[in-house]
Image (cartoon, rainbow, N blue to C red; front, side):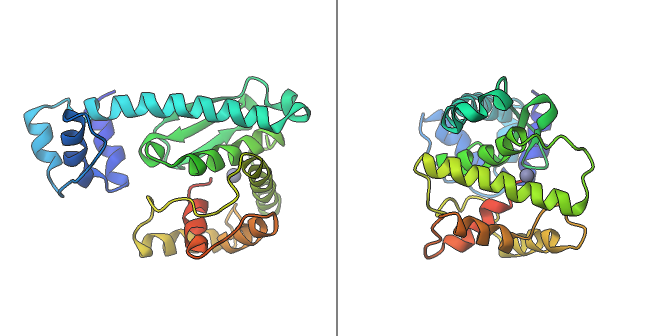
Length: 231
Ligand SMILES: [Zn+2]
């Protein structure tokens, strides 16, 4: 892992601003982060490997967390899904799709910078959705738009079912991504295009609600944010 790779990646999430604080926190052995914009430049000036030192442990930690979540989800899915899910693995990578699955190889790729600090319910839902693609055998590389949207809904259903079984039945999930309203609007707009491979967020939220996900106050906004995590 080179520092340059991390710089490219973390720039996407605007967390360069947070690096100084994170580095300071790491030095003090604390997770608290009170960063100031632009301070990362000072960090890399003092120590070219500072970013690697920060992100390598996060990568390791997320990989371990993902392995555990995946195993838990597969157990929860039960005997009827054991065969199609057997041997499924997950890898922490740099992934501009945030998270995506390769059903043919039973493989899920998850982005480090987006998910390293995701709460358990967020991480679980996102992985469960991709696991749904694998379980349901969505191996067609170029499905029709119509089929693709159906596949996404089915993967959501699969995820909702498993998450509920694990006690994650509330959509009050996270606010760590898309804190800028404009960005969320843009993502919603993308998903609303006629050629979008995914159903609209509203459609997916409605469906999740019907499946028993509780959208409490603020929950809809959070569900929006959750959906932007799902590829
Ligand atoms: Zn999907």
